[in-house]
Image (cartoon, one colour):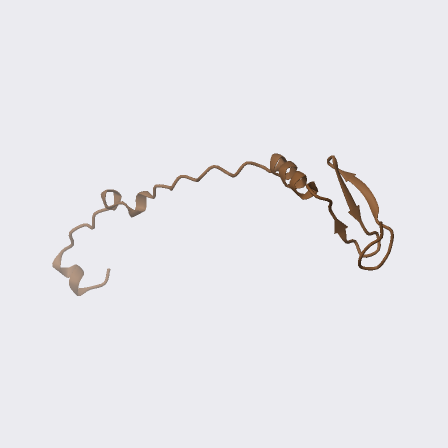
Length: 82
């Protein structure tokens, strides 16, 4: 079979049990019926599982119970910056 783009004879190779026709000149790839489905099925089997959902971090600084209470100052604190 010849490449529909440049007329070079196609090369047949086997990738993971699927025969793929490709052109060595233009690097075009042609698949027969059902070959794309086989590639998708096999790539899904090799793909890594999705990462587990991350738990929301609890930030103690945002919780009102853990904030330090401001000391009650004297009347001089209002007049002067210490």
